[in-house]
Image (cartoon, rainbow, N blue to C red; front, side, top):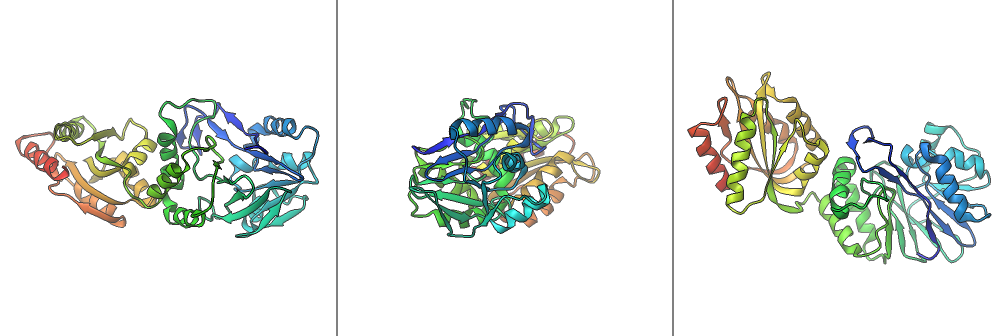
Length: 380
């Protein structure tokens, strides 16, 4: 990218992104600068990094002044330094959607800088570079827009195509793992809206995608686009059985592990997750990733264990659908877990229930072992 410069920052102090997603490898807040006859800065960064960001911008400007600040997304991790920018560059023009400017006032009060309201298909000429604006409402806030640089064929994609992790962290698992966790944690509910904006990009020539989190994507772009297409259609990405477990004394977990061993012996990948101790955000990720799922919970106070309750509520909220599902329930008396889990999932679309529901009475016995064997065959 000849005229496009990265001016973002890495955050290594953050422990929970948006107060709930563990990010042990930090987070990047991306910002870009386009140098032409006119100079455009693409988004700001979290307020805790205002001075570092402004220093990065200043170095690239080399004594010049920015003409525009393009505001793709008003979430504070991207708009938090906007006020400091306007103080330093009072003649810079802010460019955003109408709703973004309404949000700006809500967060920061009115700003005196000149403003340009843009809508779908509007353009802004910088000289050689012409920026075309593509509205992307609810990906994942209602004011969001993408910006397409028609000269270098670069897409500035707001939060789409982002991932967890600072840019100076060399992720051995590559882009997909933390991008998947990011997508299904934050954007996953809005699959239909993602599909809408992906359709707008069909036939558009792309040399790079510049998201607001994570690395610049500048090779094999069809992979990233097709992966987002799969995720936003709620299609399964991998063949396998995901088994989330809510166990108290280990007996429900034992049943889940026995099922996983039988599936593995039959050549089926099985992934067991302890909802009480493992990462809940990774559990959401794997639930969407694999094409089959077995919910395993102990009965607790006449319903299901809290971790399973939270997990299923999270799936329903994110639009969970298009899976084969099965259940393991445990109850020393008046077992209710299977019934409750099924009822909670009735809000989800296109779930195919596999029988039998494995029923444990306190722990595994001959009857429940036989049911596990039968269920394993059905899952295969």
